[in-house]
Image (cartoon, rainbow, N blue to C red; front, side, top):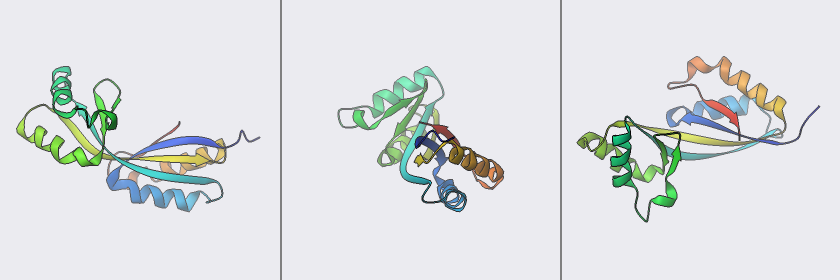
Length: 138
């Protein structure tokens, strides 16, 4: 029995986004799903001190609405800030990791479609260059 349309999100390393879309379009009918892509830079500070320096450098009246905290020391930033974040890392202002990620928003007909997509992604996990995509209900 179907529970109706559900929202889900996949977190994909940007380099793997074309592969994710191919898997999605090959295994899920267009009548069963719709999706959108949103690119981000994900920054994770190594320590609390690094996070403080990141916040001092990155947050101002222009960027505050565009930066979302994820977890304890992680942040999603707009791609336009990538150059600055990488420069700050290179110059040693703070330490951490910055990776280009794509958030894939999904509307799926039901949880059966979600399970089917999850199984297809699991079967192809070795073909992704970075970490396998993380899929979860929104």
